[in-house]
Amino acid sequence: MFHFNVQMQSNPQGIINLHGCTVTKTEGPTARPNSFSLLAPKSVSIDAKWTNRTYFMAAKDQKEMDAWIKKVDDAGKKAVERANQRKQEQAKAEADKAAATSEKKEEKKEEKKKESKDSDDDGKDKKVC
Image 1 (cartoon, helix red, strand yellow):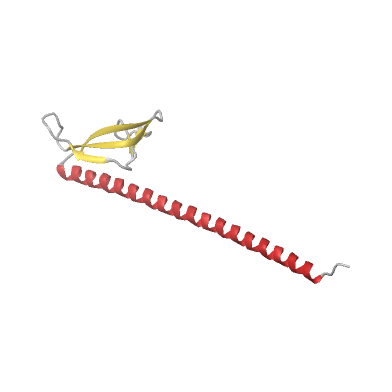
Image 2 (cartoon, helix red, strand yellow):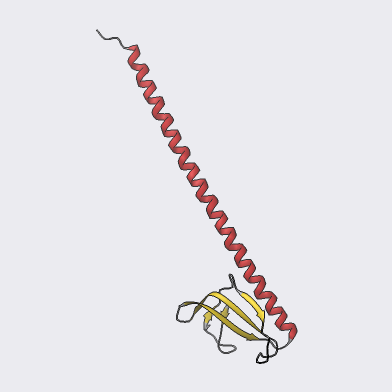
């Protein structure tokens, strides 16, 4: 998710990685009305430094705040699901590759055994004078 310092700014100030983020309603005597915080464990600022960072945001009303919290929370969960799916696909691809390599090695061993047996059989038919 891109974040901006000023509304309608054309260039983003940074990117908030929603993977693994935590969204909570901001409470307490100093909290703004309809505010929430987003703890992003892997965010990148405009200077491309990766940091753990908490963002504080405020909505115009309770309904909008609840919608933001739900959307951000859902996006974070989807990011985790996609990452887990990619890991599973990658692990399967690596296992398939290892199995194919092992299968090729076995085929080569069998070919060598057959060649060795064929050459031994050729020598049996020849008579030495």
